Length: 434
Image (cartoon, rainbow, N blue to C red):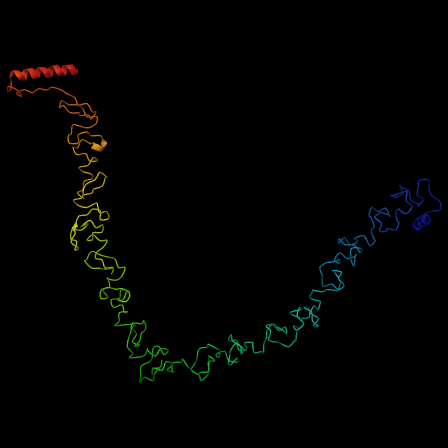
């Protein structure tokens, strides 16, 4: 009711006939609702979801309106609705503003002292998440650069002061010398370089293995070629151990571990003749009557060896007692004298394939029994042969042709009467076939 009275009081005393709500504005003058006296151009906008000032914008300038178009209004929690960079959850910038509306300014930025140690990142704090890290802080044994000078734990027992890779805590017995640390090479300098409590051990002047010889000598005694092994020294006995025991530059000489013939194999490795460099395990076998590859066999896989065990080798000079001439020493059924089989292979090594079998053309007429020759001992008999006057089935069609030929003298002597009868019969027979 009070709102209505205020609207009526604000209306002009004399309203136009076209100004229906008597608010001093007609529709023609821009009144967007001429039935409500509180709605007209220039009216005060209130948060009610209505366009009071007829500017086609609703609730602008009120706490429910997102004035800076950042997606948040004052009612939603925007603590500065005139700044689009300020809203709840906004990204905090180094700008002195509470960008995320949480009541803090610039937190999480280089300008904010996050760990409250009196320094920000901008002022040199190298870890603003730790209150014990800032410029000038005391350095502690914690692996951190407490004083922000770029070094961690310097001047403490865990720091490698001489840069040799070892600290006092790790065992460096002199952290002021790069030549002194655990495992350092011992030098002939009167210093315990390797921090083991012993001075100059392992140098050329020291007899480290106690065999009476050192690596260096004044010339009166030979030098030790291995001063870490008491079994190695000049004059020691050479044994088969892969070591130059007597320091003469040779290894295992005079033992079964020495490669006497220089073929890369010793007796201990399996060399069955260490005086011949052509004989050793895996050597190529040659036809010489010797076990070249040390496998217990002689001349295997050569022309002198009966490889298939049929009693024949390729070479007739076989030293094993077998005869030569085997034309296929990988098949025991192929050798001189073997039975020829119809398999298109020269089984008996005579240079002829399948002779005497159904695959062979014995009579030389071009066809074998396997190809249909019904009499492979007769040159005139084979499939498609011309029938001749011999009483045989020349063309192998299963029907032998019968003729009576001239047989003069067969009965009663030449020119006898029987011959004339037979001759007449032959002529008659030939006429019948015509």
